[in-house]
Image 1: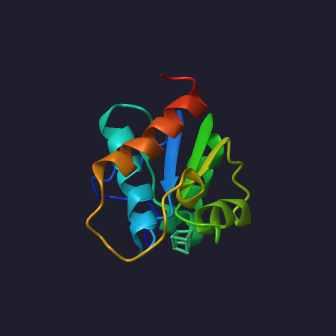
Image 2: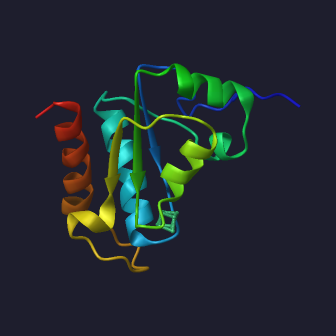
Length: 129
Ligand code: SF4
């Protein structure tokens, strides 16, 4: 079975890779959307956390070769962080959405200000204002 991604989801090795947990809650989806917005702004690239979780070799090697690894978790369960660490990928920048004053719930009508808050937090971590 091929272990290379043939989709168009930016699964290429790059300098800054972004791994949101993309969890099934507002904060998981805020993490995901912050990753999307950062990618659209040209600040790093979204990468497939599921590929890391599945220990797909090419994905893990690409992540290990990146200069910065950004993990964005929705809540203190820390799924993205644990997934990356389990694969031996070192996180350089880390944000937990609930630690930024956003409460976890299952309302998927996400507030733009919450998404911006998390993407801004990553920009600060990267030294980009
Ligand atoms: S970190 Fe929290 S929001 Fe994200 S996938 Fe895990 S439990 Fe869900």
